[in-house]
Amino acid sequence: MPVADRGAGCDGVMGAPQAPGHYDPGSLREADEAPPPRIIHSRDLAAAAEGEAPEYDYNFLDYMFAAGVGARLYLDEPGAVHVRLTRSALAGPAMAPVLVYLQRRFDVIRCLEADGYVEGWRAY
Image (cartoon, rainbow, N blue to C red; front, side, top):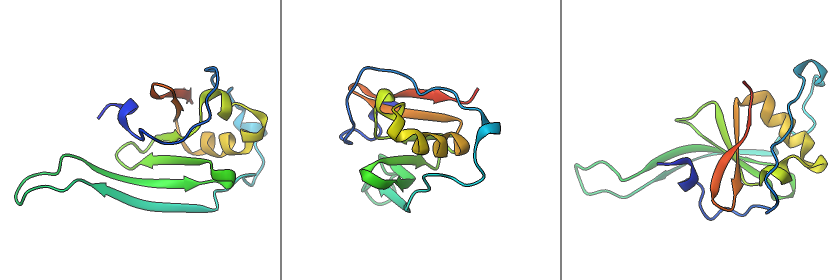
C-alpha cells in the first residue's frame, strides 16, 4: 500500500510544508523530555473468505503523546514512523520534545499533509 494511503482520515494540523530541522545527538539529555504516556499495540486485519488471504493486514504500535498528538509505527517498517501532524506543526517549538523523542528512535519521520503522508525528516 502506498504511504499516502496509510492513515487516511487522521486529524492533522494544516500548515505550509516545512521540514523539521536536524538535531545533534551529542546535545541530547540523558532522559527524554516527552516520553509517550501510552504505547498501544493493535492490528487491523481485513475480513477474508475461508482459505483466502486478507486484503490488508496492518500490525502497528500507536504512540499517544500529550495533547492528542499521535504517531504510528507499522511493524513491517521498523525504521519509519507516521506522525499525525504536518511538517510545519512538528517543526514548531511546542513539538520539540516529541520531535527529539522520535528522532532518537526512528530513521524516517513521515508527516500528514493535505495529500497524505510525506517524508518530513530522515536521519541520513
